[in-house]
Length: 198
Image (cartoon, rainbow, N blue to C red; front, side, top):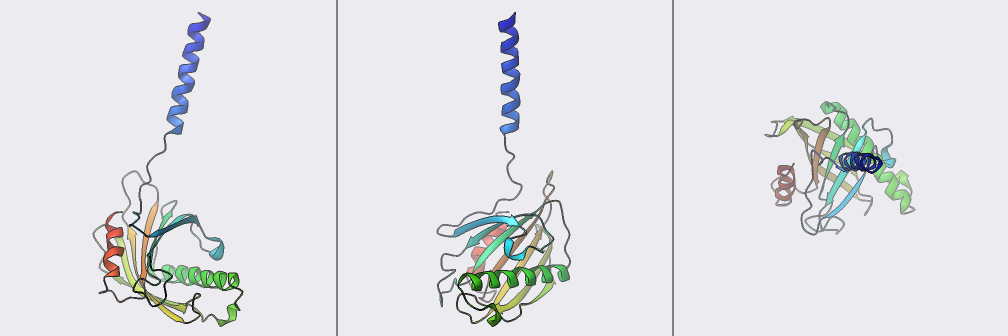
């Protein structure tokens, strides 16, 4: 009788452990194109701790992201997974991006032992565009800033996709595409392909 009871207890413990160890697949997964570099960190990031969002940021850097004068220079995408669900206005996103890039530039200049006073104030201007198929909202716009790698002025063009919530998901996904290249350049095809994967 004791052996039978012990067996039942062990079986119960194993079943319980199995159930708790199963991880649910993330609601949104950003693909990694070949040769693109990745980085993931918690939101808000240390360099922009005042951002009022909590979650994760998943980044995809073009292979030429840091190669000056290349077509892929400063071309990258990042996905915010925010928990719980959130809603954004154009004005809020402009402020969040301004704070984000101000902190990013200062942190990198400090890391390179360059005076942060050389950085021009970041200016972000967005506009609503027709929402893409899987978006609640879609924005286009630009950010004017100082390139911390060259210390030259830089204008980044953006597309921002606030994604429709997936069934059973309690998060908001915001996908950012960024490049100095104009929207008709081929780098945007790759950035858009990442969006289609979400």
